[in-house]
Structures are given as C-alpha cells and as structure tokens.
Length: 197
View 1 (cartoon, rainbow, N blue to C red):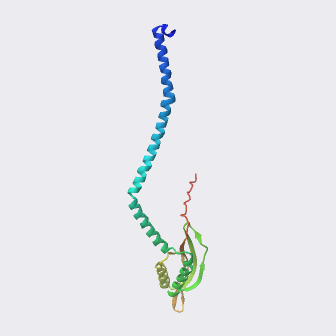
View 2 (cartoon, rainbow, N blue to C red; view 1 turned 90 degrees about the vertical axis):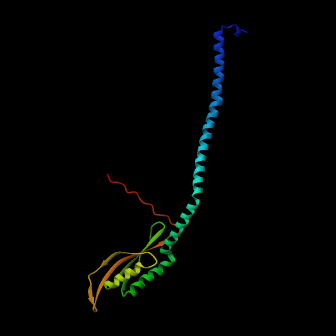
View 3 (cartoon, rainbow, N blue to C red; view 1 turned 90 degrees about the horizontal axis):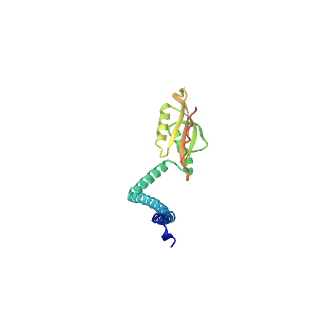
C-alpha cells in the first residue's frame, strides 16, 4: 500500500527498475548461455559439414584414386624389378664380371664395396680394374647398360693405350654401382642448407 501512495514517476521508475533487473537476469543467465551454446553448435556443425564435404569429394573421386593407386603400384613393381633384393646381388655381380670376360676384358680387380643406405634403397659399389681394347670396353659398358637391373658406371679412368701382343690395350678403372631395395625403408630426407651470412 505504501508503494501505491508514491507519486506516479516513482512507481514508474520502480517498475522500470524491476523490469530491467528481470531483463538483465534473463540476458545473463538464459540468453548468453544459450547464445554461447548456439555458437559452439554452429562451429561444430560447420566443422562436420566441412568434413562431410571432404569425405564426399573423396567418395566422388574414389574410382580415380583407385586407378591412380593401381597405376602407382604397377610403376612401383616395375621399379622394384630393376632394384634387386639382397639375395640377387651376388648373381648380379657375377653377371657383371661375366660380361667383362665375355667382351674380352681381363679383370684385374673386382672388389665389392660397403653398401651405402639411402632410405628405401642401398647403393652397392664395385671397384673394377679392367684391361682391354677401346672397343671391348665400349661393348662392356653397352652390355651393362642393357642389364635388367640398374647399374651405373662412374669414375671411369682410362690410362694411355699400350701395344701388347699386336693389340692396343687400355687399362680402365671404374666404379660400377648397383642398387638394391630395402624392405620397409623410408625415403631419404633432404637436409636444408643454411646460408652463410
């Protein structure tokens, strides 16, 4: 009753204050909590929608990915056919020595070196010293290049030809490097070169 006796402007102010408190309580306790929950749900929805679109894109391209996978698998199989495994290395080295002899070269040194691991493959170097004519050396290198396996001939050093038994003979030193596949190996990492300042 006391409030009803107050002047009109005071009653309006009191009523406005009560309404403002109720609105502030609603905004703070209900609206802001729900808005926060709404924002979180909206972010979750957008994340899942993006994942769904990515999954849909993958599903749409699945036949293409499968064909690319099969193509890459065939290429890997072909590449692995050129990289012998550890069991085939002695046979390959024997065939290199046989090629030298078949082409008329005298093998003075045939020394397999230590393997150098390079990630998923290893280099198998063989130091060779051969004596023969220029043509015999050329035919040997040609025959090595036609092997089913990869063999690189590097560091080729030719000495001056010498006449011997009516033949012009060269003394050749070289490094024949073949490669073998390492099961479960990883690709070599490239080290970044730092610039000098």
